[in-house]
Image 1: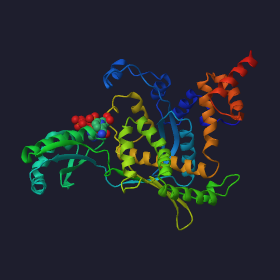
Image 2: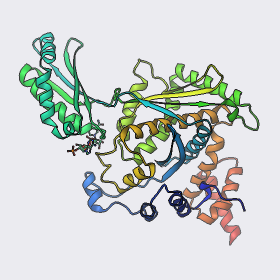
Image 3: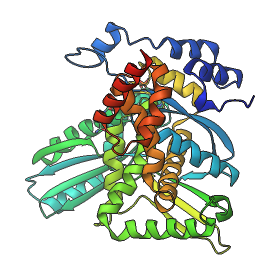
Image 4: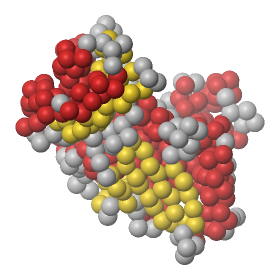
Amino acid sequence: MKKPKFYQLTKDERLATLVEQGHLSQTDADCLAAAEPLSDEIAGNMIENQIGQYQVPLGVVQDLLVNQQVYQVPFAIEEPSVIAAANNAAKMARANGGFVTEQLTRLMTGEVVLEKLVDLVAAKAWISGNNDHLFEVARAAHPSIVKRGGGLQKITPTIIDNRFLKLELQIDTKEAMGANIVNTICEAIAHAVQEQLGGNLLLSVLTNAAFESVVTASVTIDPATLTTATLAGETIAEKMIAASDFAKVDVARAATHNKGIMNGIDAVVLATGNDWRAIEAGVHSYAARKGAYQPLSSWEWTTDQQLRGRIELPLPVGMVGGSIGILPTVQINQRLLKVQNARELAGIIAAVGLAQNFAALKALVSDGIQKGHMALQAKSLAIAAGATETELTQLLPLLLKATHLNTATATELLAQLRAENK
Ligand code: NDP
């Protein structure tokens, strides 16, 4: 008998396979299998007014090849087709040498903004002339990040709109995403500056436009490997490039192009305990940084007729801090990923975004997006209609043949099936 594919196994068999392959320890697999909720002590202390817990399935994208290293990538996601698409893209990218990533800088930025200063130019000059003092204030505000080799790196004062004085603070937060570290330093600097310059202190806080934490990932695909039963690989590649070009001139398309990318990115960000709102805010502000909202990735021909995709986006993710040390599943996910540091994690996430984009564009320009989606959507509808595991096998083929794939059809077909099975 043919060996079943990973996705055809039961959850427990999948966990056993990951243990067998050395990706998960038995203890971690047992924890995932038990799917224990957070204790009231943890959940109740994490947020205000806690009244329950909210479940999202956790899946895995297998063997994503990034910088010549193979990763098992945890995805926390409720949308049915995302993992299947990423797996498909991961397989194709692996056959073509995998993803290559790069991150030149990894700094977070904070803003301190004052207004109603008597002399804006003199105030700006004071900042530039008193860097040593302000660096000392920053060190004293967060000595532990300095001990870890991080802390304030640069202060840039700018006059904006002939009204505001903005201090941009570049801060190395090491392995943390760093929002709280940055805010602590910003507030200390703000206090010191206002004490000297007076005026009105408006705000001192991190900006989520983390443009000093930009990561790129690229992949080069031999178009022959894209060939399907009905379409030549070159034709698919040509259309993927055209679809990517279209996203550059049509905001309506760019938004969906980027949403597809974020399907994978948010899933890994969530699974690794990172702040997905921060990532979303940063990514979309980066997409709009030149004025017009742009796609985060682009596809083109190389000089030797290969299909090359490249993604560029800010990914200020952390390995420590926030809820990372609190949520047990996040720690299991870090071990499953076998990721060593925040830069490596950001590279994997960028590659996931490009993989997701590859899968979406390829499906769009060949079979259309619904073909792959519908099988999975049918499953969700059947489950929502109340089908049991055994009923699913009978109900899904009927549902996929139905003219209207919706809840009413699923409920009706399930009722018919139950009547027949009586
Ligand atoms: P934390 O406040 O948890 O700070 C991280 C801490 O981890 C550091 O203070 C440091 O403490 C400790 N740490 C241990 N090892 C390291 C290491 N190798 N490198 C760096 N730090 C280390 O988290 P963040 O400052 O990262 O802030 C993230 C949180 O802030 C998230 O929960 C996010 O949702 C939230 N947030 C986000 C905002 C936004 O995005 N706009 C705004 C406000 C909050 P020590 O050195 O003392 O051991």
